[in-house]
Image 1 (spheres, rainbow, N blue to C red):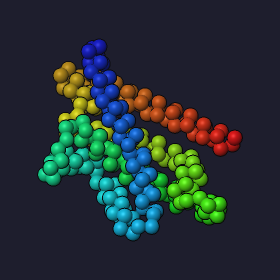
Image 2 (image 1 turned 120 degrees about the horizontal axis):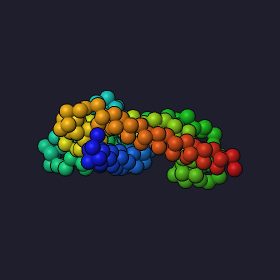
Image 3 (image 1 turned 120 degrees about the vertical axis):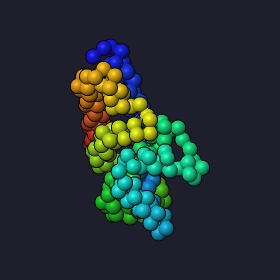
Image 4 (image 1 turned 45 degrees about the horizontal axis):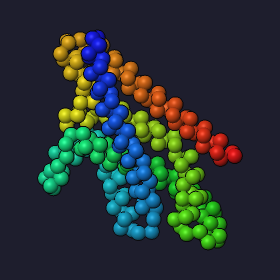
Length: 214
């Protein structure tokens, strides 16, 4: 495969990493916010967040991407392809992340929260000082799994014209009439990105474990 084609693949990979990275950075805290709302006292907010989470998780990602890009302009909200892709991936991964966070919150021992209230902590203070540090450690592995799934399904953004890694590999294959080299190279790049993500996650897990022991 020519060097120019390889550089094009790397540009596509950079787009994939940038879009997915932003979606992950925004989706993880948004998922936590949705989870806390779903476990809160306001019934209306709980129901709304539950409907949102169930709807987004049920809709195929490619359909959701098209809904954001082609459907929102009917409501007066129009986005370029890359911002639309970031929004779609963020909202999608946030819905799945919220289920991970919610499960960790629901499994958290209530006795610790009762003790925190007895010491005069507010619910918000107890959450950030006691609950969050523990559910964070518990949630890292499933959150990383969701991140890897997001990266694997991210080629769905090509449907709205974003030139990501997969779309660039297809363009090279169509222009050279040799599909095997670009798609093998794209697969290798995806694998390398996921390996880096998994290694980073393991380092974080070890760090969290060492902090908890200390």
